[in-house]
Image (cartoon, rainbow over all chains, first blue to last red; front, side, top):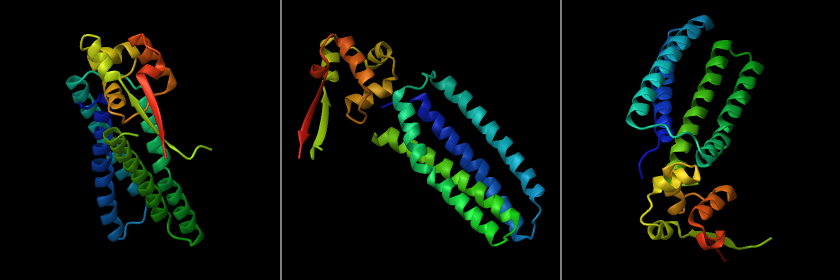
Length: 139
Length: 74
């Protein structure tokens, strides 16, 4: 079965997310290890990572659109999307619980913010992986 | 509640063949879904909504139960 534009788009989003936010978390980890605790320093890094992700997404989708004509989403694409979101949203919920716990114990904001961001990124990555699994294995 | 498992099969591949080897893309265009969705329905990886099922049966000019069959097994 040939790969649809929707499926290609998910591969591109997954790659952009892993490369963009993966780079962010590697550098943020190094910053935390070297004692940086100011949130604006991490915010600047996050903005750069986000711009990098947007560039990757735009370039990837342009190439994918040239390679195969986008057909538009149909009911199967929407169902796969809903089910993947339903099965990956618990990661964000776990992150929120973790963040509340961090706040209760008075842990520095920079750790809480990065924990939330990490859970958001992991939830998205899990969502993309589940979409790809549902496309390949069926619902 | 029925304590049985439903196994849904379809005859889309045969019906496409009977229609002069209609391609999956041609059927997809007539039904209004992607070719990959028709492929997934044919290989029982995806069970379509009633609307799409009726659209498929309409394309072939057959009743719904001639295109899709359901067997209940324990």
